[in-house]
Image (cartoon, rainbow, N blue to C red; front, top):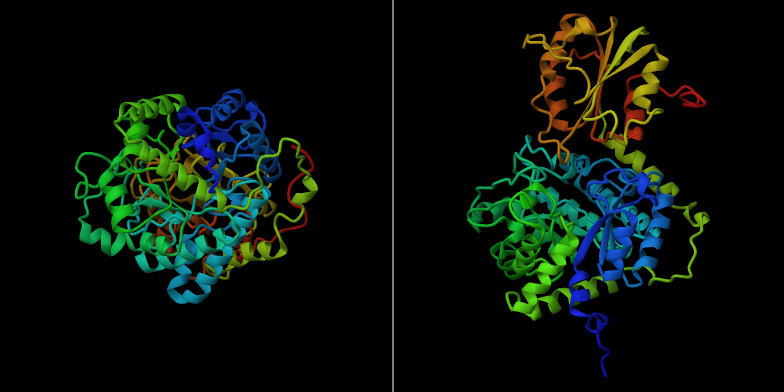
Length: 544
């Protein structure tokens, strides 16, 4: 006789709660939360897990702390959890101490010249991410991005995509997900049906994609078709409007997109998860409860980060009890969730288990360290042989935020190596006094800056909540201005290839300049070494 599925033993409210994924910090203590607006305090998190909530998305903390945190969450829940993170660029992108790899678009650029090597590296990228996620207690990786980044002004996808054409994205994203799932971790193709050709950020507003079905079939959908054919475990929805498919509702809330297109036309039978429901594209128009009901009715199985988890559970419960949503839909989603969990390699909850930090010694293998360096080295573009002149000089660094970034710690090569040459750092971000004047031909207010040669380091890429891809800033005019003043000693661009492609033609051939898709310290070290700024012993002081 076939055993009854575990979920059938639960109350209806517990069954509904299993389909909700809430946000928590990877840090153990409430006081360490980096984003307290979104990350639930421990008491609330523990209470929701006791109510039956079935998943947690995590961000922040070290890899060792994450290992403790995932064990803690499983103990609190007492039932199998989906534990996930947005680790599109390796686990180290979010959790210090694991591998932080170059953004996927780096391999999309390599795919043009050496597709076989790019696919091999994408598979290794996926295996590295999946293995480290599993060792730290995650069983679900919210990657790969299957969006085709064919709009250079896209403020939110940018280097997160695996390429700029459907062929390279499909091939590389599929290689990544096969590598990830080979490690016993679920992968997630996102953002369906394609977020690559938008010029607005769904974290801030609802983008509109005006393409017809023929265009979607030619550009946006092929990578998802390829991922589905390869057996991707889950697909994440996109918060964008597609009037040609549904003139009333965004994709996340549209049965025409999720049921008709994804389930029926593309034949996807795995888990469908919403993008975060707290994003303004959804939360700005629908309350937490109604957004959850509409998303579930449209075809989503899992509800990621509803603005109010209990309101979402209550609204879904009412919709099921009233007949607005048939009970069969709930059963389908619970069965998909159970099948997905059964395919992962994490142990069942064990309240008596203890975690040994000694188990983490082999977290980043020698092969994975070599992979990280190979990816950075392969994706580096550089010109010029002349060394940077000795200081005193100015290390002018542009970044989104000098206080909320992981790539520029105190000992970052981008700070320490120019300092050793006598270049004093000056950081430009959204909080600093404006560096601009009203002269469009010479926009940088040089009179406000120290004298001497200038090393210009630009950290620019599309990022959630930023609202742009950095193209609105007058860096071409700044480069021309510094060259005209005889002050530009070198240029480093980290992140967007489009900015590098705009600036490099303006440079004299001998001027030291380089580009890396990565922004993390390893990318800085490799790039600056190419500009003649090698490490000189142990960088930095002995205390802060």
